[in-house]
Each structure stands twice: as C-alpha cells, then as structure tokens.
Amino acid sequence: MSQEAPEKTFTLTNDQTGESMKLPVKDGTIGPSVIDVRKLYAETGHFTFDPSFTATGSCKSRLTYIDGEEGILLHRGYSIEDLAENSTFLEVAHALLYGDLPNAKEKEAFEREITYHTMVHEQVHLFYRGFRRDAHPMSVMCGVVAALSAFYHDSLDIWDPKQRELSAHRLIAKIPTLAAMTYKYSIGQPFMYPRNDLSFSENFLYMCFGVPAEPYRMSPVLADAMDKIFILHADHEQNASTSTVRLAGSSQANPFACIAAGIACLWGPSHGGANQAVLEMLEEIGSKDRIPEFIEKAKDKDDPFRLMGFGHRVYKNFDPRAGVLKKAADDVLNDLGIDDPMLEVAMELERIALEDPYFVERKLFPNVDFYSGIILRAMGFPTSMFTVLFAVARTVGWISQWKEMIEEPSLRIGRPRQLYTGPAARPYVPIEDRD
Image (cartoon, rainbow, N blue to C red; front, side):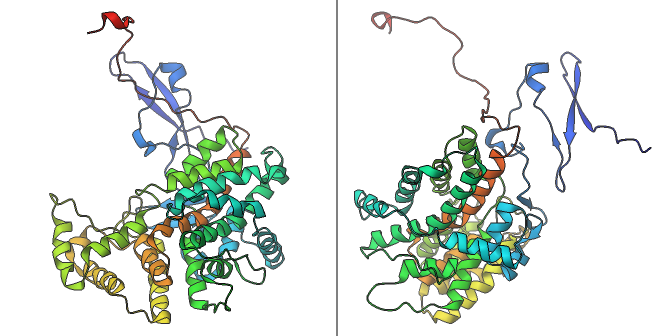
C-alpha cells in the first residue's frame, strides 16, 4: 500500500519566548501555496497583519487564475487568448458559472435563457425619472441594480439552487439593459427595448445607439470588439470589487444587493475608472507634438504626471488581454475610418512607449485599459460610461464568485481583524470638566 504524503507545514517561531508552532501549508492546482493561519490567534493570541490583503488568500476558488509574472490569465483553465479568439461572451459566462465551456446544445439553451431575461420590469423605467439627467451613470447603476431586488421577489432565497441560478441569469441579462437605459437617459433619448434576434453584444450596441426613427445598422466589427471587451473583463480573480461582492454575500445579502455593492466598489478610479483615466490623460496631452514632453514628465519621479494605461499592478510582464484588444482597436478604427486627433495621439503614444528603452526595460507595456478606452471612444461612448461597460462584463464574474461562495459548505460571514492604534482605556470626563 502506498503511504500518504506527510502534511506540509510552516514553522512559526516567537523570537522572544522561543515558542514555535506548525501551521498547515495548502497547495492549489497551480500557483503559490498558502499558509493556513486560521488557528493562529487561538493558539498564539496573534493576528496576521496584511493591509490591503495583498498577501492573503481570502478564499478557495475554481474560477480564475492569474500569474502576473508570466502574463497568464485562465478562466476555468482556459487561456484568455483562446477564449477571446474563439468563444463568445456568453460561452465564457457559461464556463465561469458552470465550470466548462458549453457544448452546442448547452450553448443554445444558455443563450436562449439569457436572451429571454433581458427585458426589465416596466416600472423600472419610471425609476429613472428620479435621477437628474446629468447624474454620473455609475451612481444611477448603483441605484437601479440594487432596486432589482424590489422587483424580483421570486429569486431572493439564496439557499434555493434554482433561485440562485435564476438570479444569476437575470443579472447577466438585465444589467446590459439597465446600462443602455442609463446611457439613453443621460442623453435624453428614448429607451430601446432589447431584441431577441440579436446576440448579447449586438443587442447591447442596439440598445445604446439605436433610435426608433430608423433601422440600426449593425457593424460586425464593432459587435465583435464589444464581445471581446466583455470577455476580457469578465473576471479577474479576487480584485477589490469581487472581494466586495464576496464580503457582502457572506452576510447572506441577496444577490442584487451584492452586485450593487460590487458596482459601487468598481466606481473607484483606482479600479474600474482606469480606462476613463486613459482618455483624460490623452486629452491632457492634446496633440502628437506634445507627446515627448509628457514622456519626459512620466520619467521624472518628482513630477506627479503618470502615463495611464501602461503597466499593471498584477501583470509584471505584459497584460495578456492587451494583445487581443490591440488588434480589435486596429480593426475598429479601420472599420469606422475615424479622423479623431485624440486617437492619433493614442496610437503615437503607444508607438513611442513601445520603443523607448525606459518603458521597455520596466515592462510598462500598454494594458487592457489603454486599448479598451480607445475602442469605446471610437464607438461613440462618453468616458463617463466606460466603467458602466466594465460592470456589464464583470457581472458574470461577480455572480459566479458569489454563487461559488454561497455553495461552499464552510461559508461564514467575513470578519477582517485590525491592529488597533487608538487610545487605551481612559476615564470619561464630564463636559464641564473638559479643557
């Protein structure tokens, strides 16, 4: 009989007392192992200290794997390059939700299920009238997505597998509709009802740019680019918004509230606002002849200016999503034949940065935000809508992560701890005796 391999452990020693304890080490399928510190406080009276949780594994997950050093992104084991090149967004959504890419029969059934959930309750239309027309689209999305729980009472029982699945399908289907309505409301145009004869991305573009007065001409190039943007933003492991969704979900909040929490977190400029920041940077540069000036500013450590859309917090080599979108950006610009000075600035900035030794040596390559910003501007979306489109794509990852967490037998409410640095206990002083 073969013997089981001994459990891997990590020995922790207290330098002051000489005491030591062994902590279990757990291995994943691929990637770094983790030290299980769950018993650390009970046995030593100490917590770990990890601000921003950048060295903490907060959960087990089978959805997404990232290797930032090698520039690898896998969804359920499938490379992002293969998915973007060969699959549709709804195929990727199926893989994230259920573990595998669908076969032909499953694909047809899943696409039909999502398609026939794209309409929203008619009273949701009235909900928009409570917002100012100039409200930021993300503030509107926070409100209307959270409000869905007031309209769909039949899918709020998180312990019922059928209701969980129904909520997942509704969110994936309805958030694009709400996003398009948000855009239409901001520009004073009538809402466009979804069409069941269009694909996911075609339908979204139709709801955003179609008008009742004339037929909408669908561009296959733009629809394909939109689909790729959705695929490339579908999930990205335990980032800030995904962790927010999981933490909210750990309290047993309903899925609509959890996704609204994720949208609120995504709104932050350090997270979902990066592609908007790219366009704002290009506006600041203004013209191609000023690019060398801003390149030098970016190299100056004492200058606050930073090149947005270059390099990535996770990917230390290259962003594997960027290559896919670079080709899509070229295709979109060629298809539209746009003469836009800002897009010319972007292309020239990309060329110079890729050739400049300073950026090459530091591996500051254009990332997914750089190219997605260019594509979305070319399509006609205002920068205020960029993060909304990110939310449309990321809803698939959020709801898949939420569903995985709820189905985990060891589910407990999240409760991070702290290192308290405030005053120690002190006596209460009546107000008349306070200096």
